[in-house]
Image 1 (cartoon, rainbow, N blue to C red):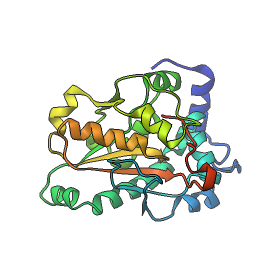
Image 2 (cartoon, rainbow, N blue to C red):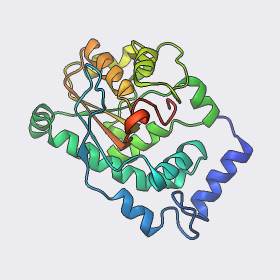
Image 3 (cartoon, rainbow, N blue to C red):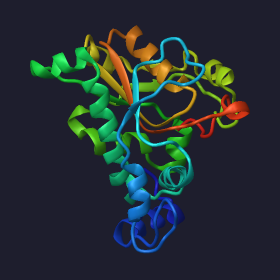
Image 4 (spheres, rainbow, N blue to C red):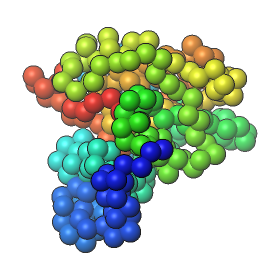
Length: 243
């Protein structure tokens, strides 16, 4: 990946000597104790309102607000890569809860069959700009490299999701996700877990589940770090762009 002097230097310094909390900017640690406690809520099942048809059973961590939102934005958009470990712990709990709630996933593991973990796809444009795939990095930190199958791809360009309503997001992503040809044979009949950092309207997870089903994969559940809580007029407004 290309070296990006300003951004990559910040990421390197953050790994070697973090200066402030990614959530509240308090000095001395990547995640201060107060912010880390907000990440430590038990995983919960979550469905968007309105819920798109085909939305997979999904488990998530805290609300995407306050210091949780600030920390995720810093990790993803400001290259605070040292925060990956703390966020991966949250995703790991959601991942385990999603698998535990699915009889098909539990049964596969009980007889020694694998369960595939697939990161929600990033656009090539954003991956090039960042020099990394944040959700892919997070998935590997949470599930282990052997479990992660980077098989979901975007087969066409999509609009930036920020500011789109639930209906607009669904239309924007409908049919945009595809299963990479080399991944299809590996995933045939295999229980899958789609992972992402945030779930808002459910459009991304829904299209990922559709692509996996169309490619012959087994049952699909999903897990994320955080989920938005929308109220009143804000309910249909997305709070973050597509990764």
